[in-house]
Image (tube, rainbow, N blue to C red; front, side):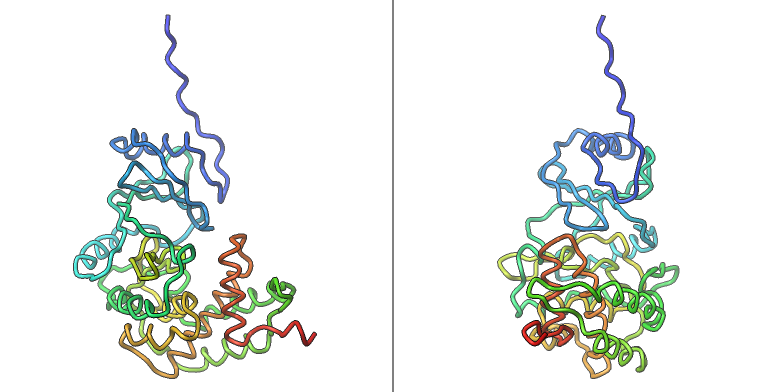
Length: 309
């Protein structure tokens, strides 16, 4: 007599774990059975917050590794799908949002794949900054009723000061491959200057997850935005500051030209945000992300000269 195979039993979940294929398949069987028989393809594990697996030829499943709020909020997803109809750039939108299951604590998404590389793998040309700025201007719309607030950037800059100073303290002993270290007083001054002036922009809808690994590129051109888990209302300056890291100082003028807003206070606050995010990147286990962080800190004048030490 033929015995039925034992059903898959998920192992104990631990925070930040990258799930094995059997677990991902079990999640699909539980939450999206119509996709459960599609073959798995390439895995993408270079994001600290989530990992992705190609699903057949046309789809990708994206599975968080960390708690974040919001997380595919229903009001935000309704807004996203409606707003994206008028965008003039490509956006990889979720076609299925699945609820937690089998001890896995996060919502996860299935989205339609499109052929492009992340900006960290395939760097954008400086001229692409204008197109990214134009795309962010379309995302950064006035909030609508019931919109969720982004947990990390929904508040003012001053509410993020503690995290900034803590990150600076954690970075004080790090050294770049060339032997440079951060200059704490310059970084504090950049942040304090940004906090001292009123917000240059009001809160808007934001992507919520802007990062060189969520900005897509093809042949040096801007190719679109992906991964909208934290789409919500927050600080648009945060995303503009992060966007400058993709291009360096020479891309700021083009980015803001495409965005349609400029000003001295905006630039001061963008630089502070860029510095804060670069401090995060230099801790990354991803060599390309760490290199990006060190390079931008050096270009902003935030590092020591190792030849003078």
